[in-house]
Amino acid sequence: MLKIMKKILRYLFLILIIATLSISLWEGSKIFRQYYSPPRVTLINLTGEDISSVSIKLNQGQRTFDKIKNKEIVECAIPNVRGEASTQIEWTDSEGKHNEFADDYIEGRGFYHTTVVLTQDKKAVAVYKMRKN
Image (cartoon, rainbow, N blue to C red; front, top):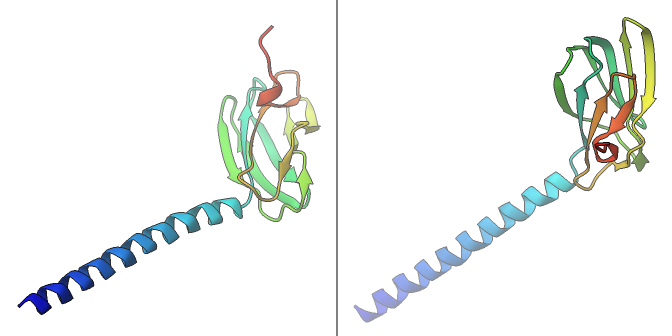
């Protein structure tokens, strides 16, 4: 009986070790996948009007939207980004076509996420550069 109990305890201990290692590997792989996932851009339209033909570019990577309403927020991953980049936004509104750089810094991997606001004066501004006067 004692031998059976020891055997059961060994198996339970082995199962506990395997479960602990599995959970650790799964959590580690999530961080690995997030690190190597494409950078994300959040775009906030505060131009005062709806905009169309919106293109968000980071080097070779690009995402497009047909229309973004005033005060709408869109978030997207930008695939195929290599190395360092600054967010470039192109859009069309009632005044014509606009092409602005947000003057931010983002890389193709490493948990990068930037938020860009399109302002009423037709500028693309990275949120960390905005200050109250």
